Image (cartoon, rainbow, N blue to C red; front, side):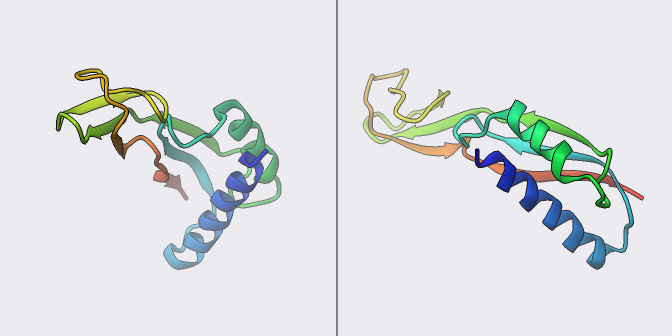
Length: 113
């Protein structure tokens, strides 16, 4: 389960930024996740609760913002919505797609004290 290491990385980032930006408590974390990031959201929420114990983010809320997947079709030059890797182009049926959006995993915003 790589969600545990992702949650630990989020907490490490929060602690690093707390030193730089001088905050002492995290109340809410907004996290953007695309459908191609291969993240099990329920597992991440569980792991986040576990790894934030006894940290500046204890009892913080993790809000997940779902981003859409998007690709550029090399065959017909269309931008198309995708929900998983290796989807076909909805315009021409080609599988020659270059992912342009949807594999993100990033902290979008924080509410801190």
